[in-house]
Image (cartoon, rainbow, N blue to C red; front, side, top):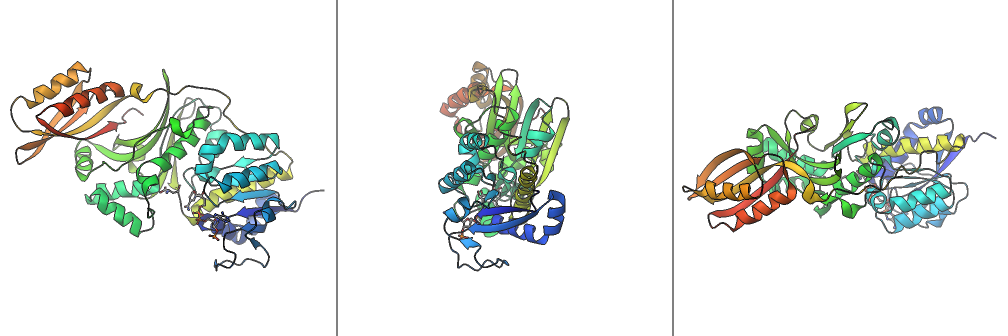
Length: 431
Ligand code: NAP
Ligand code: HSE
């Protein structure tokens, strides 16, 4: 018998969950026609069932007992939008073990427990979909797993954290300092009270770990991702970068190079002509280069109620279609290889450096000697403002291995004429 209704149990009804509920209600008939059946939310797990949610929810749907969702045999699809990695992982596993398809927006859970969840999905022949976990409303997971599947992906570079992109945009356009834009981002509700995950790059690291695992067909665990946040970026760095024709962006980078794969998150100087350079404010974008398709870019809102819910709801529709056609689990885990990661010390980039030094003859020669001893070749050197006898030097290196640059900077920091190595930012110029 053909199913006329596909039943959904939700875990969570906060920002994303409410958005999903609203879309399923407001676009119900369109969704039913596109899917081939009505999608009905039959149970929703929340912490506080008495909270006023401003939603039209029938009596008896809300529950604070997870079993009401997970053990309800009528539930076909479980939608995990509660967040966290403890209970969320337990409930997600339980849902899959009951043969229910799982849709999640949870990057933290996918980055840490993706392998375990995929195994459970495969053993129980059900779907595990997680489009909203990376870059919110931007379709990128399905793009990489399916639409670009015929390509050998050479690189993925993404602005996948809206908070830091907003902050860097304001610093660029207004010349503001880091601490001021952080306060502004918090006041606007972009950055959380504890902004560590965003500004230290951890949020972006989870997202690039997920994307890299898909494109390189190998499991990239979170601890393998090199992570550096934006806390050291100053208004001067942004101004000098701009003078050199670059913008500063926090990127998640996954590259397949001739001597291994690189997966890293850090601020970069990006040529102002690069497509990602024009992605401003809270917007996200993912730039993908495949051997057949060439360069492509996917742009949109990486967070927020309805953009994120747009991706979750489309996953629900996909999972529902698969249930209707009895083809659950046809696109499973794509990590079928084991590929080692290149050590960060071997990663080669150009670099922007800002140093504060004593302003007197011979200083540059001492610095250049140490660079030379460590095979660091300089492309440009500028002397900026001199304040109280201290000059600011801005240098750009030619491409050099990370380990050589680190060693050179350690030596330079020891020079009595060098007051401070203020910053070193990688330059990402090859597309
Ligand atoms: P949220 O607003 O904090 O909502 C969480 C919901 O889950 C609430 O309804 C809460 O119940 C419920 N919940 C949490 N822990 C629970 C527990 N132990 N038992 C029962 N219910 C529990 O979170 P969100 O912003 O919607 O985020 C949800 C997920 O989507 C996260 O994984 C997040 O990373 C991901 N995501 C969010 C965005 C975004 O823009 N917000 C974007 C992309 C991905 P109460 O309502 O009763 O408190
Ligand atoms: N905190 C994230 C951001 C959104 O600023 O992009 C959730 O992934």
